[in-house]
Structures are given as C-alpha cells and as structure tokens.
Image 1 (tube, rainbow, N blue to C red):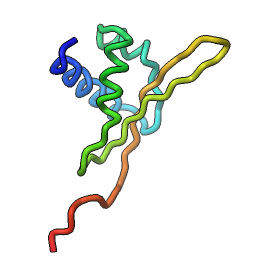
Image 2: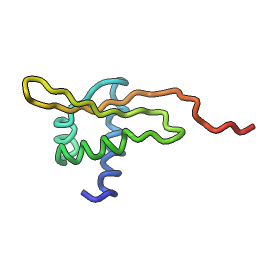
Image 3: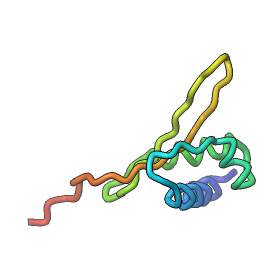
Length: 89
C-alpha cells in the first residue's frame, strides 16, 4: 500500500470506529476482512491513527495481546477533551 492508501484506510477505520461505543476494541483481523485489506495494512493505518495532532478530539490506540503463544491485535477509539489549543489572548 502507498502512503496515500494507508491514510485513506486510516480515515475509513476511524469512521468505522466512531459508529461504536467508545473504548470498544475491534480486532485487526475483523477490520482487515471488513476493509478488504491485509492485517499489516490495518496495523499500518492504526499506527498512523495513534499519532495525535493538536485539536484532535479522538484518541486511537492499537493494543496487542499474547495468549497461549498467539498474538492478537485490536484497535480502539476514545473521545478526549484535552485543552491543548494555543492561548489566543
């Protein structure tokens, strides 16, 4: 995937996660099937979403869990109310 494709996938994943309850973990495998791409593509988009910019009101995280030797990854979204806007006085 090109950088542009990963950015587009990140926007699609963000839109999908905003339809769910905040904090709901969604498996990378499930997202890859839904978005019709590889799990590596979803992880790349998730990594892009994890970088929070000033003014963003959503926080995205990628969580990896190992159980019994198998690793599983999840992406989730949480709304945040951070006062990080520059002071305009």
